[in-house]
Image (tube, rainbow, N blue to C red; front, side):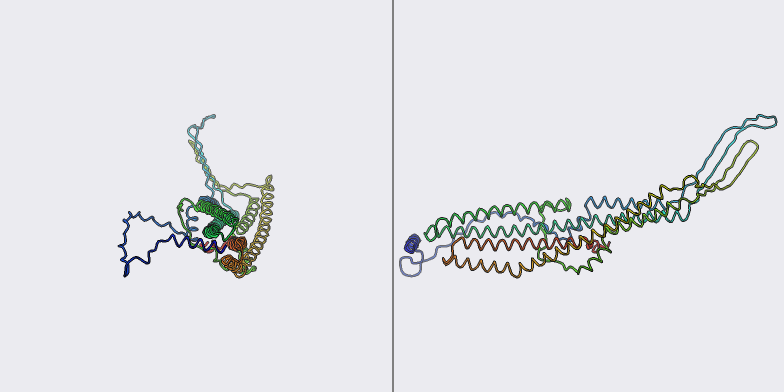
Length: 439
């Protein structure tokens, strides 16, 4: 093998022209450099706009249709409050006709009757009715906040999913470049007889796998970018760039503090609490409606000879209808609202505990990969590369060390992504984005 290497080097040296030792004394005059023709400069392409996560959140708040639909429900709840505060309208009745004399001495002619009736709004019923509508409005506002909170959480997940796919694509391109370099080196060693043919076959296989991984990573990047753009809306251009990193993770407080914040700020829980209070006021209203309704009535009759004016009170006596059905229905709905509130509290606490445990697991994985596993894999790769360069190890050992390093690096990218998802889930439960927007 050594004689083959010497022979190959001799052939390469003989093929190189002697440029450094020209004939004659003195240094050879260097030829004037040939300046290439100036190529036409292409117009500069505008740089793709860069968007941060906060900017994307503002864009989603401004143009997402689900938030517009939720805002319409809030406006409908406000209209219900206005309707509950309205006073009853008066009832006016006017009759006109003629009177005919049937006995002597009575004069016939035109006759008119005017009745005006105004129902008096019970102040206790009015207060309960307005309170029930007000708590209904609070429930619609909390529902709208819940829509926004879920939307921003899904937006954050799509944002960090794009960052993950970009990191994976960048790593895949680096692996492809390294595979191309290895293949070129192996081809030289095989051509000179320093390495067997199967090493070139193995290098070609690794190069094909690296090309396939790079193409798949690029497709996943395009897919994740499309999902993010569909969530934000058409205001986000197709050629956007993102400003952010997977490595940065916000601080998360302790579990007890998170539990208190979730119970105090979660929009789903606030909606259930408002529904309970609305059901309580509705039950009180149905019970108050058992009381008699009072109305003031004025009547006036006019004919050819007389004008008769009367005033009085109209009272609806609740004898046959004691509103047993509406009261029982309102009581059942109240019990249902209370049960849903208790169930929602249980679901939220369980979800918070699961998200917090997932956060701790992902954080430990990231710490272990960053401080130990990835460094050791990188050190082992350098040792294997040096051993392969000096002929102490074969190509299989070098490729195995590369696979271990790539697996640790990709696992770190996935662990950082899982850590971001756990933090997003915690922020969704504690409604951090709503706190930042001042709601």
